[in-house]
Length: 469
Length: 134
Image: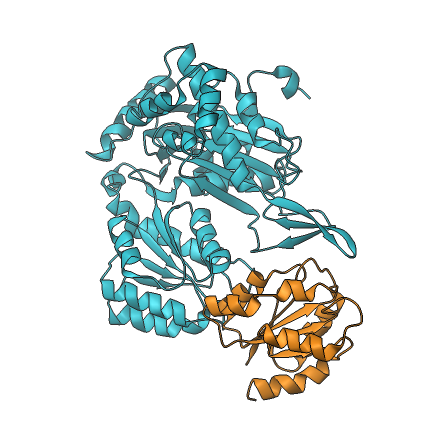
């Protein structure tokens, strides 16, 4: 019998998931509040006793592994040269590594930007710029100014390889916590995620976890191996691609609506059409975007911030709610749980807005260009038209009575022909909130993780006529 | 090795000449960054900054080159690559206009070299060597 305990130290909740690998079964799940400010083991112990209560007896675990987004998650600053190129590449690498990109800078850094890195409590700086053999002046300047500022946080250099030697010298000269890896954009529009992502993960394990107060728990668990979003990304990839003879679901989109952010993951190629001309930086097959202004609690005010007064009035009248006070209520009490129909209605409405907006920012765009040679299509970003499944996760989606209405928001409900949203996907829900846990399990036993996901991530509640197609 | 950014500007999808230019320049020992068809001025300039290019070579085959190229030098100046060499060639204007006038207009727009229709890329190679100081 191999029992594993998988833990997700989230910003609000510590979530536990116990699995048995021989039966490919979930033994039980439980959660309690994350107690990183005091002692992270408190919340963990509470959740653990709840779990044992559910299972009925205390069981022994072969391995206990965890992912974490506690204490603000992994906060990064992405620095590049040109906004559309190395800055964008650096940003995508950070997101692909499961980080929150709090700061994004281009060209030469100035003192106020250096100050923002210091005061913003950034965990890791990713310094990119220049294709291989291209511009090295900017990255050298930026490394030097970072060095002079005396910052001690890890700086990962992933820019022009021709500048590596000089960058290493600067790292040594200022005694910096510097790391060198491959260029995130070795040639124009080509994205190289792997090397920098692995480096970020390595630093996260060795240095960041300790700073986040998670080290305290090391006696109880074997190890913390991933930032939570990376665990979800790995789970989504596994579920999409399959493992050995166990088939995956094909191309999928995962939408995770949380309290602080809405994360979107798409696992698919950027286009299957031969009649389009694709422009811009290469898109990763497994792409993650994070919307820091779209969330159900901490980021609820962000949902209404971009609305005009007219739209707010319209919503208030149409839906019969005071939307501004509702989001503020959620922002000031992040532990709020919906108590009545009215609360549920507002939760549902906010979740739908999050899903719609997050997809609006994640999906690619297509434009018709009229040329003297006829009509051609010009595509920027990823084409999600043909993805087979849209999978919902996150507390609000899981608890919603109208899951279909939330997930439907990721499709092209407004019939905007330029947005490459999923056309006609099937909708699934991660009912037991296991995706992050399965991402962790995929590191030990991908086959079991895949089988459990295929069993437990299943059809949505509500609108059964739509789900049974 | 000198770096040259090439591509086809505007709503122009003529890809064949673009490939021939890439082939010839690479064979002649240049580091060629080909940004392809349907490229905007910004695409050329961004690629030139990241690759620290010595030259931008703009192709335009569909007659709207003059509109597409207007203001490109100014953007280079704004972007900090004011000294980059700008070449343009192809069927850069509509109809049978006197090429000396056309050339003058493009030179006033800040282009260093302007090539008439039917120029072989080999002819331009000699100019590169002079302008790039090789």
